[in-house]
Image (cartoon, rainbow, N blue to C red; front, side, top):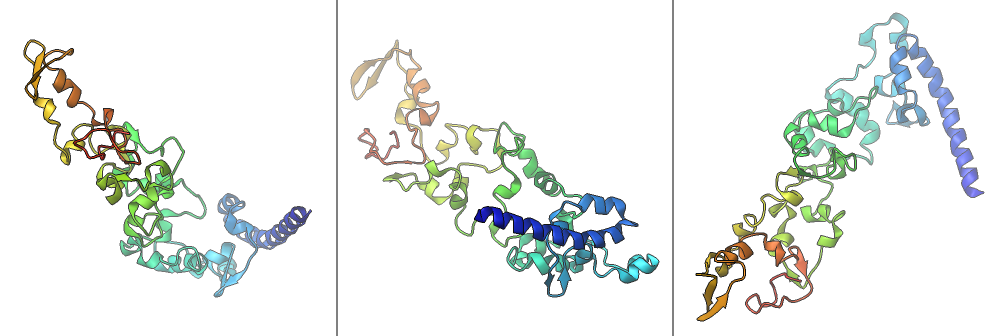
Length: 295
């Protein structure tokens, strides 16, 4: 019952506010019919008019009082939204209170971008398409074989980025990059008893965020990725003669031919070391002191 009462009250509020805005919009629609029609169901036209530092919601909330403009149609007598700080000020009168207080310190603001550079009140667009206007290289990376599911519609640019923030790369975190990645990839977060140092440092040490030719968003395929920090096992260069390989002075028969060691130890490192992010179980190999991330 309480939910029903609340819903009824909210509906009544929206209807009453809609009546006020409808009257204002009807006046504007006399000349701007298409624009008014396009914004009828948008949030700016549906919420109750309120005043914030002299700023009203609705057509006049963004364009200013239109009485003088309505009398003679002079465009100079109404505020025309544009890529300028005057428009930013009008937007931030509402959105700057709690939503984007750090906008003026953000990278986008520092590069002289404005609210209307990305937003259109009358014709909203999709975040990925809007971002791609400037970030074409990053958008193209999502077309690579391994990529985050942006083009599949399972996420958007704003899943990881806050375009109004003043954080590094405008990411949705004020902490480490890893803290952002592990909001989705929790199984890789740890902490682990046996940790992989680059994992703790930054996910970007091994992964690229938007898309990659290598699998699993890796910066390079195995074993070349691992070889940037690690050396090949000493077995890798051994070749058996007639299928026999001397190891520690003991002849060992190779069932895989003379190049068996090459094939076994120069393919994917994760065939034997699958716990690349970290492990709580000690490895069985003696030389790795339990830290070989094998299980």
